[in-house]
Length: 123
Image: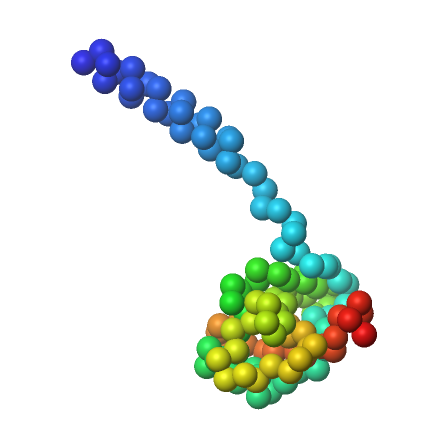
């Protein structure tokens, strides 16, 4: 019985130490940028790709794995970023080479896909 009492007392302490060890803030590597501009200025809204997104045929592999936070007074949103051959789920091969796709409300019936040109370093 004494052994059980020691285990019961030691368990909360072990859990607290484990939680403190692993309770770190998520790395900021997934946040690409922040902007005060309205989210819809990120690129051109593509109705066909937005429909495909709603049908789960054109999406980020992991929603918001890489994102931009639009934090201005107007057009606040978070857009997920995806590119062909990188983190884009595109079973119908709808993506164009060198284009970047920004997802608002990915995997929902309100999904909107904005298309932006090549990254500045790729021009």
